[in-house]
Image (spheres, rainbow, N blue to C red):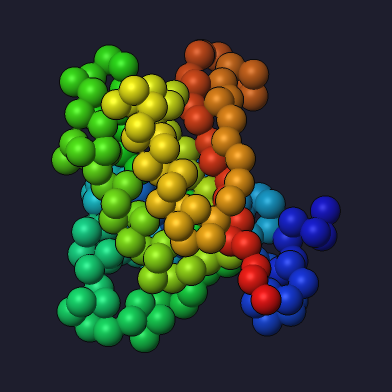
Length: 192
């Protein structure tokens, strides 16, 4: 409905589609979902060249950035993100799962790949979107005996974001294989 596609009362410019920025965008699966819900993309960040080529065809007018580490360090080099990039209403991202997967070495958020969560958190901290949507493997819930999941929740809570998470399986949404993922949807609380 229109409640999903328009800005919330007191947020943004009061009308028009909600906007999003996409981190670890891959080939754009999350972007497709948000676009179908009426959201407008502002920027997408992804390091994989083939995924970037796919997304550039589908979102030619979107700003494309190739390196999340470069993007997260933008303020140290050039000033505020908002000097160059528009602040989105939503930041969406599926930070790398290799160090969280039960099939991997389980280095957790201390690992080089899944530790990219900290880059995502830095971007959220600087841009302060109204909403954050993330996804990862269910191994996040048990990584480091659950402490890594607590770190994700605490990082968001420290910034004033509160929300919910749930494990969903793609086989119940039209995909002919079991593919479980944990999704989190968080909103920034308003004070005063």
